[in-house]
Length: 288
Image 1 (cartoon, one colour):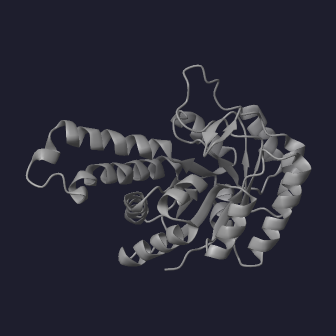
Image 2 (cartoon, rainbow, N blue to C red):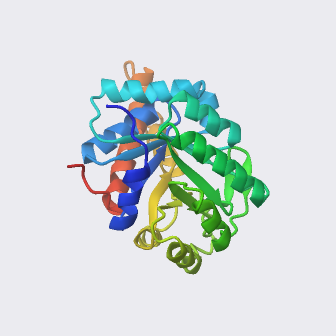
Image 3 (tube, rainbow, N blue to C red):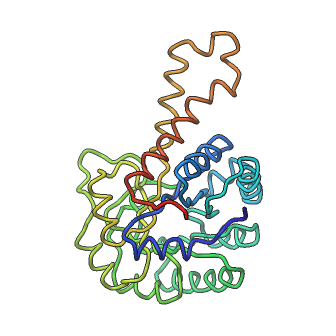
């Protein structure tokens, strides 16, 4: 099964008041774990890679080919979107050429007019090849591949201008951050989310930094227009905890427990479990 772009999947999610999970891959185990969870739940899924993870894995073409090969090897039948997460201008263009089915151009750190101009160009390049595009307005707090955002709220008028370029889904800062949330985090700003959703009633909105936001807040955000939920840290923590338990229990010293296929198995399963748990409560319907 080939990749699909995200336009119809996320438009349907916005209309249906549910979300589709967007899970970051970091290596082969992550890729298999995400695909397994989506297939077992029989739901569409978006697999995304950040610029840093792609560099670590060997480049965008390798990531694209790895996901495609695993889909074939695992007999994946659910729709899979292959997406670039938080890509700059050069990365977005490279992924368009590499065969991704969706790209995010994150120009939030540029002057707004430059963000607008470059988003317009990426939309034209991508749409010419049937590739969907995500853009961003207002930075997402925390740090992502060296880009630090304070988490300011997206400007509604700027969001409308970006949306008018024909982007397929839009990431808007509403107080969310990347990574683990601090104890003094004030929560999502639902007033700003309502303003954004009302101003762009058909636009699927994207909630970055989904790991760590209280479930009730995420569910409320989904009911208000968030259609794409980004998850990375939650899977990383689940993987680390399961791997730690395996080693602390001395399993790696039993027989050939040091074999990486055995050593990494508990963490990989923990990712799948996390993916399936999230799919259950964000409301993604099963594929017909």
